Length: 301
Image (cartoon, rainbow, N blue to C red; front, side):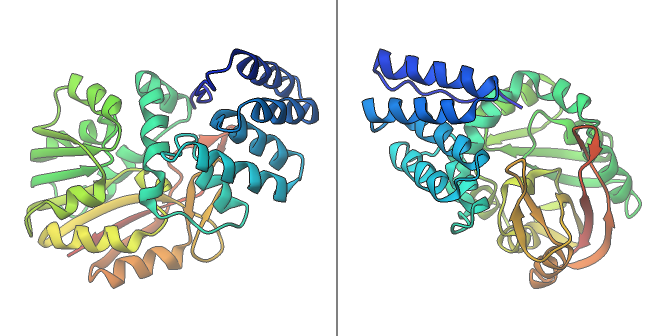
């Protein structure tokens, strides 16, 4: 997706150890890489990038306890957690992070990714906007106002623009919003957390709310669904996609994105007081040329 984040230690020797370690890792010698990452942290105990890379190497080597320790040190060294150590800790069996704890990671990831986002998703056969448009417009062809949660560079906005009079987008990444603004699709764009943005909106302010692949970075859908229900006008629609798995609840998948079980999605919608009108299996992208299992939901207030 993006070049691995590097935050300098401020020590030239420690940084060089880190660079050598990355070269070893690229050649497949993870044991040598782990040793050099550890040396870098011994030189600079607050070297967040080295702690994070050490956690990745140890996890790949099967050292789960050592990986957890390294990721915990990475978090402590960078309170914003721009590398995303919290997600790795969740996957290793630690406490699932609240969505807010991922903001530094998600913002940094997509700020890096923004200039090549559209092309990269083409390479992944990304279809979420088109699938959502098809599903939503089966229940209504025209909408007064639409809120595009996690709008990114505006791919969903482009799909729905012909069907809406007023289009609003919000995204955590300033760089993604810059790319969306260049397309001239939106009547309003905002940088911010979707949960906070929803709180700031009036009751029944929107006739359609969409979220295309946004919930891969949201652990619990219940709060978002409840907030969306409040800002939707009666009788209007909420359409979204998620990655999914065969079990229960939300898990962190191998690509460090959340996957939500079908029952979990149904419960979040029902608990929000929304009526589920469609929940279908739908893969919106590929990974390693294989479809990623997913669900597409349409609900009505």
